[in-house]
Amino acid sequence: MLILHTIAAFRAPTSYDILATLLVGHDQPGMTEAGLDRALADLEDRGLLGWDRRGNRYDLHPVVRGVVWSGLDSNARRGNNLQLATYFESVPAVDENSVTSVDDLAVPIELFHTLVRLGRYEAALNLMTDRIADPLTELGAFRQLAELAASVISDPLWLESIDDESDPVEIGALASFLTGVGYCFAGDPGRAVQAYDVALSGIVSLVERDKEGEELLAIFRSLRAFALCQLGNLAEAEREAWQGITALIDDDYAELAIVVLGSILVRRGLIEDGRAWLTDYRGFFEPDYFSFLRVLEFGWLALDEHNYSAVEDSSA
Image (cartoon, rainbow, N blue to C red; front, side):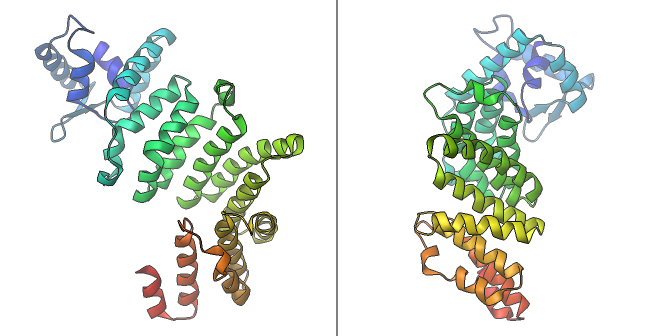
């Protein structure tokens, strides 16, 4: 059962090399590589284990995984997770420039899930910002980004685990930001709004109590406005956008507020007003994080005007 327990701790198919590292040698003195091979073959023959011959990876059916994992007591689960965390933390980080698919992020993503199961939420979020979020964004894997971050904030008591020296509002805002942006650009603005609302409740309390966090509040208002715009709730979206832009117009995040307001006005049919905001010089900063939104809006405008050459220029 040790092999099944180990594989059940993974969220994705597990390579033979990883299993051999975890199960063969001094940590498991009774297990040899030949014994591991025989055990894996036996489990596959019994239909308990799937083997991807080409990738030499092993996985469990979701039902089998659930039964195996639920059969472990809390101490055994924690021991499994600690072993996995120790292993994954020892694996050298992948060069972000070499990432061409989500599979290339298997190690940091598995480590992320392991840290979440151990209740080390702040460490999981730090790992995401350092090694996972940017590559997933570059790949356009926004739903994966959202679901990873959402796995943190789904625990209502997760903020209680944050180190006393850290700012729980800032950490909470980060988790909600990653969840919201991921869902928003994955085409699920309803869940994005829910994630932003989680952050806003804490930020509003911070502003009311300590008169701090006004910039963070305005950023989330702009993000929430864009998600509301996607939902078609244009009246509320515009109200949120104006609140955001009032606070951010002379800020480094003016670009976000300007693009969001311009997008909303375009969707309201106020084409010239929207175009004016989208071309406002205050919305052009380096690095231009939200430039793709501006390009997208100009593309839609050109399409509405049947200016197909401009559409091609926007997508180039």
